[in-house]
Image 1: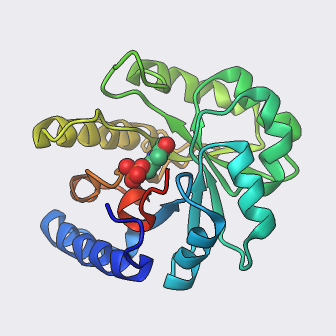
Image 2: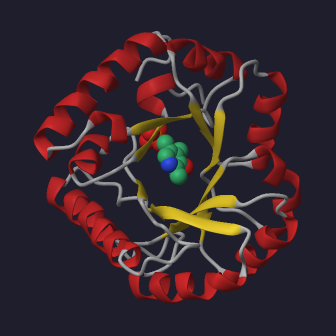
Length: 229
Ligand SMILES: *Cc1c(COP(=O)(O)O)cnc(C)c1O
């Protein structure tokens, strides 16, 4: 992807694709929010995304998040999408609106302890069971969410997954569908601390399939802002 293509043009293409995927999946496009992932690019490029109309930004490291927040004007909604060490919670908790990588009780405990208001979290699930991936296995995720009642500063707004790196549509579709089924199971529990209405899934190479399968937040980096690294 050419990093110098305008973010606005890229966003127009993405929006067209979102509409197409929504049509195919019989979805309302208003339910799909784009998180602009700016981890590969400069603050200047990130600010172009805001100018183009992006309102949600995502970073996967504390350093990138804090640096961009300091320099960026406007007030995007911030998503922390990377794996999070407990010792870094204190530094980022005031600066993020959503955390996409809740995957263990020690992290829940730390988030609960440091939170000054309710923190919106996604529980990260390793649907594809790849060893290299973070996140809980499906069964573990169910048990984990039951345990979160002890940490009332945490609200489980939904589930997040990263699909395997593949072009195989069936594999991708299966992964996203499994996450949706799991979400529906948790939603049916009607837990006040875990409404679990959202699905954070789909990246530059697979977001259309993710939308067809129910994504409400797609995390788009290279297809939106390019990759300067
Ligand atoms: C980097 C990253 C993305 C965006 O990746 P692209 O393929 O460039 O769209 C999405 N989600 C997570 C968790 C990431 O780390």
